[in-house]
Image (cartoon, rainbow, N blue to C red):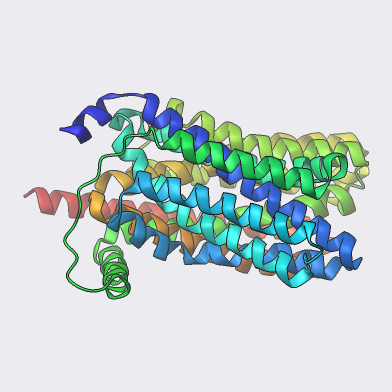
Length: 424
């Protein structure tokens, strides 16, 4: 009865509290990790340590399937509150060490890993709670808001983290973050997320291991979910790394952008991702899995003018024509990428039982996260090899997107046939 009442709300108080807590927790964690990296840079003067610490802090995100198992086993509201309190304690503990002069590089690394680990546990609980708090017809929009916050955090963390660290100093940043995590935890005590306690026959470690095994088995058994995971991984391998690695290289090295126009270009790229997340509700009503390949074809077509902007002929016309054409191509591509990702994940949410939802979502997200750094390495090699012909990696991505569109058409044509067989 509680669950049905929660689902009747579009974006009621419970979802609003969840969203507000998400803003504080995700942005706060990202700000702190970046601020701590800067502090380590100031402490050692070594850029390699700065980069290594920031990279290591992302590794625990691959442990999100464990967080998914926990999210399906325990009360999700309690978990969200506990994770916020845990973030608060980690921050205040480090503040105590900093005040006492014991904030070594090793301690900084440990704190960054702990904050990232908490985020890895926190996100599956949030993702699994969304279908319980909003009306099913609003699920795409709700996911868009949550994903938009994640994208905003990634965009804002380097900027805000650097500004706040420079103006306030690390100590003030830590105090403010600790208070924010505490207030978020208290605020979310007033959330109501439906929960049905499940029977536990073994100790907690064995139970969670069995739950994770069940989650992986379910994903492998449900072909439609397995296809969605492959699609998410391919998007993260082909498209996302191109902009992460290629964006700075194209704007800074190929086009010789000024500091201002470089910042504008990267900002537009990030804002396009957020815009896609916030406008998913407009497009979701007309989207179908059987026609998803058309969206991928549109992205492929948009990659042609993007590639043109990187050719010697276009670059020879002057700086602004190439820059404008590149940005004009990037905006709809980044928006489409976000819309497709959210739409596919929402479909998985709809067809996954609540007691498996945390695990399934966490597994898909973990696989997608693994694909991204592999793609970054590949694009790094491509841009190094074709440093004088940067349009070639773009054309290779065009070919890859055509192939992905064909695979997606085959995937979801078969899925429709399977659904008809089940119906019969």
